[in-house]
Length: 83
Image (cartoon, rainbow, N blue to C red; front, top):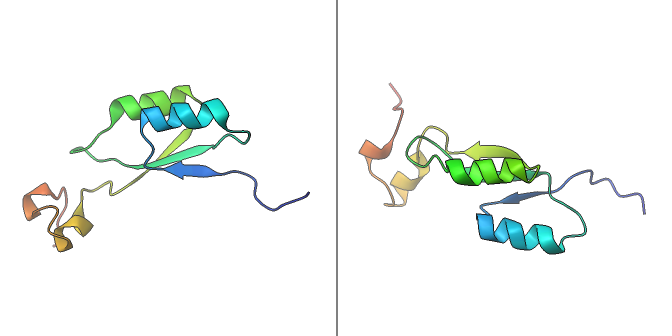
């Protein structure tokens, strides 16, 4: 068929999950989206994903501000504050 999807991505996959997926997938993902910021750099995962040919995109790049509302982080965890 002639579908409209050109690429697919994965989110929050570990190195092990990426290995499992790539060993069986018939359609390879092109992107890995992860939480990444100075408190959670994930350098090894980013390097591994790039070695596998995945582009890496990040969310919460200024720290876990949304986690404060969920009581999963405190104000000291933020990298930026709203003036």
